[in-house]
Image 1 (cartoon, rainbow, N blue to C red):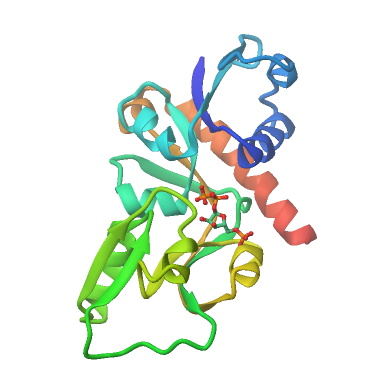
Image 2 (cartoon, rainbow, N blue to C red):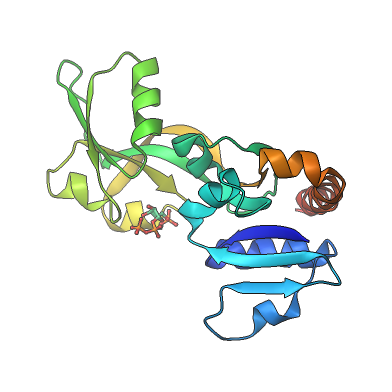
Length: 212
Ligand code: PRP
């Protein structure tokens, strides 16, 4: 049985759809209830819904053999896992954003509000830019509006949140998408099952990409 950590929410539903099409269905997962664990012994899978930012922890610590995590989470927490495939869903980008028309004052320490302190630190240290990180947990766009920060480092998907708050992208740091990850020990001991699933899912992701 493969234990698979799925990110709760819209991305998880998209990812489950891919796994179902790839030959790993678990119909009970579509039932409306508050259960968190679903299994289909015939297909050899047990799924569980996990907070998206926790998927990598479950996989790193072997509570799950594999899981699906955003590249943003992998870059931020750098878990000890194998990254096996890009699923081509959950696409967005990590950006620096600020107030429309605002300009950076180069000789001042830049105040950066973010949920992703490590990504922000790495980005600015490569530019040799001194910054002051303000770690927030949500509604990051408020920070420059209220003068809490000069810029934000955050995920931009459609760009609507920025637009509706009079903010704009200043720089793109890195493109993001959902990745299939595996626990290092499971990868060794459940090698065949994991590779088979990875190939099925990867093939499907590639054919979807080609069709777009
Ligand atoms: C994310 C992100 C942005 C928004 C971007 O927030 O932090 O706020 O989505 O999406 P858009 O470009 O399509 O508007 P999330 O919905 O995770 O909520 P949060 O404020 O709790 O971080």
